[in-house]
Image (cartoon, rainbow, N blue to C red):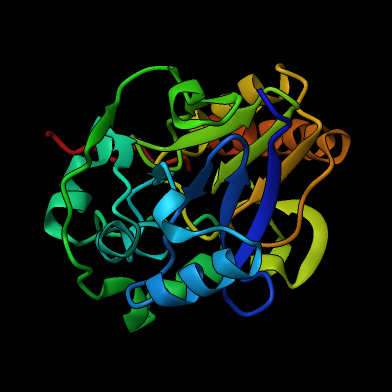
Length: 252
């Protein structure tokens, strides 16, 4: 199978919210941006030389509105099936992210008040339900979908055979990408400890690059150093009784 290229599809700003297109034997789109982003994504994918009718799959990394908001629209525009994890079916079927959002810091507390995060997207029913590691070979990409619970219960990443990790909100750039190359938590996590465990599991697979939902690509070595600091921070919070229990997962 041909080498897979991972190309960014900016949805908001230059790097504030990203989708991606994976170019292998057939193209796969990862994430769909905020509601109303479908045409913007298709226009950028077309600029990369992709015929939207050739898209074989749309992978949604998790049930937050800036990642699944245009899934139904992209499905109509491409005819491609949508793949998503069973544990986030509630948001996908209702068109609303699980609330309340659980901030990871001051930025999350500010963003949780933004009305854009509380709108209703067009609901959709995933055509491909993910519950475990899933190969993308049948969809023309040398890679696999990897469940990475923590940010939400149904969060997933895509790992190509070349080592590119399309990481969703497993980790982000600081301040939603305003400080490129500096690892940080995204504004929200349902389960910070679980998310960190998923991040460390992905780092143990020795990825070459992490392509994130918010910001520019991250180097694994820098992410590993940040993850060690984050582990110590969460341990201190847990010892002080200041770490909230994980959010309850949705039931399909």
